[in-house]
Structures are given as C-alpha cells and as structure tokens.
Length: 166
Image 1: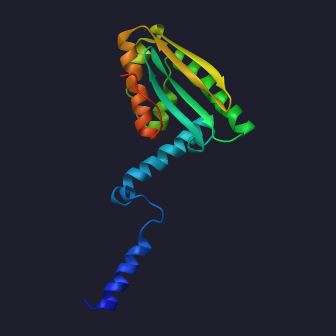
Image 2 (image 1 turned 90 degrees about the vertical axis):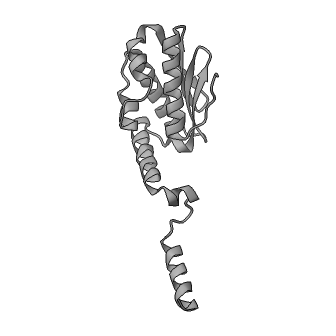
Image 3 (image 1 turned 120 degrees about the horizontal axis):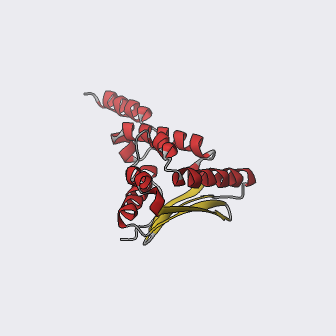
C-alpha cells in the first residue's frame, strides 16, 4: 500500500474511534452500551444521576449499608436522594426488591434470600449531609451472606465504591 493511502486509512480509522473512550470501551462496546443503559435506569429509579454523587455499597460485619450523597450542594438533589432511600428502606423491609431488579434488568443476587428471611433483617434509613444511607443489619448468617452478595453485585454492576467485611 502506498504511504499516502496508508496514512489516509489510519486517519479514517482514528476518526471513527470514540473520543475519550477507555481502551476497554473500544474492545467491548456492548459492555459500555449496557452500562449506559444501567446508568439511565438508575437515574430514572433514583431521580438523580448517581455518577454526580457518591454511591457506596459497604459490607459490614452485621450486614451493610447503601450510601448515596450528592458531590456538591444541591438541595433538590439531596431531597430526592433522601426520599428515594426512605422508599428503598421501606420496600426492602416488605421484601420488595423491584427497584434493583428494574435497574439491573434481572433479579439481583441475594434478594431471594433477603425476601425469604425478611423477618431477620432490619433496614434503617438515616439522613447524611448531602443525601442518606440505608443501614442493613441482621444476626442471621444466611441473611448476612445474602446481604453481602447483594452489595457485592451492586458494587460491581454500578462500578461503585465500597468495602467488604471479609
């Protein structure tokens, strides 16, 4: 191939590449499309973009916690987060995991056991300065494993922060 044609081909391919995309995005475009869809469903469910917020899923020795706080002062966004997390705590206490199922387009790992063992699990909402948290506690070993599986899946699928108790 002549050098000018080779240069033209390289430039054309470069023009087609997504700008600012991570190398893994170029190799796995479906994964990023799926993640974008997850983000859109999450925004619809929460009422705020969780990626302009701090979203954590922490394992704790007696359960775990889900934290969502805005990254900047935003009174409307903070109020939306607080209402969402209060609703999540109440729904989870009833064994209703429809919101995470909708966001992830599947039953989320751990939720079947969390539903079955709902009497052994406590969900408590608490306001935080820029949002809130849902603290999940149990003394039941099977429920604890399910809670940790649920939180690990959330950390992974949302690409969110958090720590494990193990």
